[in-house]
Length: 367
Ligand SMILES: *Cc1c(COP(=O)(O)O)cnc(C)c1O
Image (cartoon, rainbow, N blue to C red; front, side, top):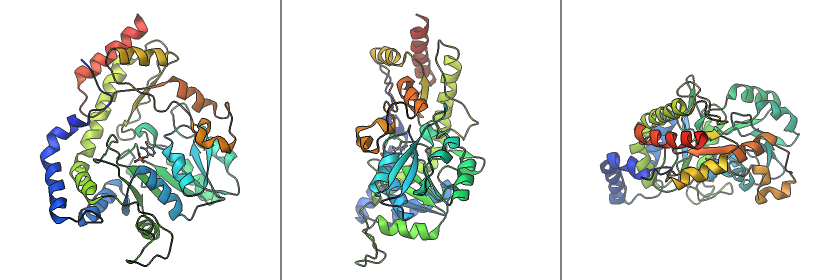
């Protein structure tokens, strides 16, 4: 009996009728690009996120790319990015022509806010905290520091749709929040998609121009732009799924709680922190052990789809060799990359399946 890492089909079956009807509606109208369903989803997603505006874009990477550009950040400027994240957090900065400057993370996998001050230079223009694995960064000290030093805060919320601290949602605290709707994300569409949230009308207007050839009015192009729009069909599908997001996130939290109870106290296994429900929306459930590679092999041999997110820290990718970082520059990130293992987590994962996986992990450590 195999247990996949994610099971998108399990999520589709109960909403299949609604999803197909939403696609049918767009196909009938043939309003494939910038149709009314896009504007509708944008307003729903803004409301959900607690931001004034949301601008649909073509991917999470382009959300970051355009967010950096909307702030007027480009060549010669620096943006601070955690060394442990998915590569797109840094690539979005690079695509805008700016330079990512890396900073280490804490043992909780999130940006080390205390290390920020040391890497700020006169070229620094923004800080880009990543709510990695679905766990919301404590943004208060980040915002305080950014305000003091005149920097912008761009949240990478691509793994944290719906995460919140108190009443404030991921993506609505900094100047800009960047989301991905890649199929496997907490809120995913049926292809590539993304959005940027903001409370600034001016930034909203800039983003709308940047995603659409730099045009504010058809065939008038005051700025250089791109073709980075969210398809109407994807927006219509997202409108079907958005009302279910809180339920999906609650189910993920439940899965994490089951793991937490079953896996406590095994060998050198370190379990993720469980901040109050809501603060963590468990895009991934990530454990740590020095025996990571052997445990991964053991689970795969027994039909469990585990994974590593991510095996290489930002500063050691060939893509960023030109920045001149070395092994040892970000010790926590480097250690984390060699010890982390993501166990299957998705809203439809059953208690029995979590039991099967947990039993395998127990057997591995107790054998
Ligand atoms: C998925 C992801 C992105 C990029 O989103 P895409 O839609 O795949 O381009 C950016 N940052 C993080 C943290 C992600 O997990």
